[in-house]
Image 1 (spheres, helix red, strand yellow):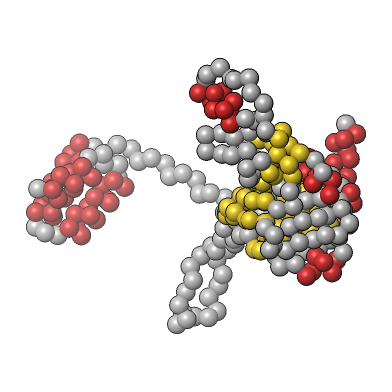
Image 2 (cartoon, helix red, strand yellow):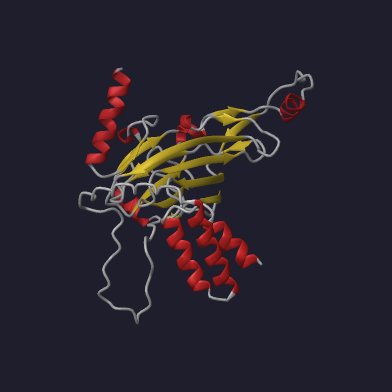
Length: 298
């Protein structure tokens, strides 16, 4: 109960400060390693417009931050804040027996820290049929209204570089995948490095931006055309009472209208036939429409 209350208070405080509001699984942004605002503003932020999957190589020539606890190559990404809620799956792919242990700092439009995801948020995932050894986690962010974009900074720390990750031996993974007996062999240990390979998959609650309702008229159309109102601002008028069904038409009247419809169609006067059809149905005819259709077919 206390945990839920704390999460609620955190979400409300983030919304009041206009940063990205995030789910309660992350740590408080205040626990993230300190980064100077000048360093953040000097970064080149790569735009990610959902839906998108972006592979990123953080190499020795990539942007580096060596400040306080942060050490190594970093990934800097800008996300739109007007697409609804965002879901970001961050994957750090193993290269041989090395791994980049990611941390993520989420910043609002003013580049103020809003949420922090430490490396523990991205646990090891064993390889599958089409996937490699990796560290992976999913972030779910809801940008507060009034912002155009938010920012994600991916980095690793000195503490992460001193740690390792125990992976699953590929032979074990294959045996388990095909249902064979798992061999008793040691699992490899991956050391953490200041460089690595990332994959980011970003999706939005709304697949596109603003949806336009109505037609775009050419420039020759009247400029003062009234806008299309979707839904009335006034109380709806009461629906008209349903019309009282007509009494069934007498047989003689049915015969009269059917004969007149056939003659009109035969004479090529379709308009007259349609008028007869309308009048017959208004008077309760159940056969006039069928007669008209059959007459036209013939």
